[in-house]
Length: 136
Image 1 (cartoon, rainbow, N blue to C red):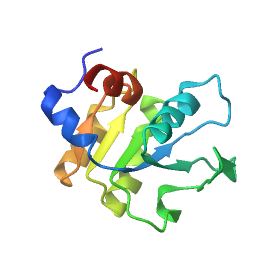
Image 2 (cartoon, rainbow, N blue to C red):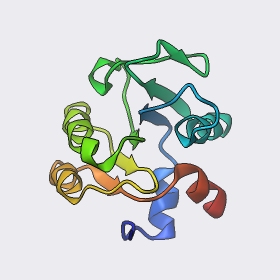
Image 3 (cartoon, one colour):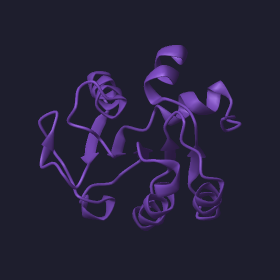
Image 4 (cartoon, rainbow, N blue to C red):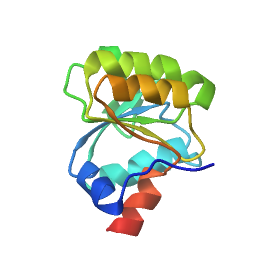
């Protein structure tokens, strides 16, 4: 699977944004949906867990939906199967993040096109942990 066409410089600029809502964040420390946001939290990012089955992850309040988050969200980091991305993108458009980031292995061209038409930058099939370690 290919990934988006962002240059390394463009990806580095995305990392200047600090408020990251993680859709599908897991309580299970063995899952990427847990250890990737944990790593980002340790790097100084403000992680906002989104998981309807949890009330708290990593000591942070967990929200059932992006629409429940009262604070500004810069990046929506998506850990959901590709066929579930469209609903997350539709919710994302309502909260107006600057970037939607689809983790490694996740790609939904239709949903990504909708996000771009709404002025949201889209990164797909890339891991936020791996890219951060590679670039910094």
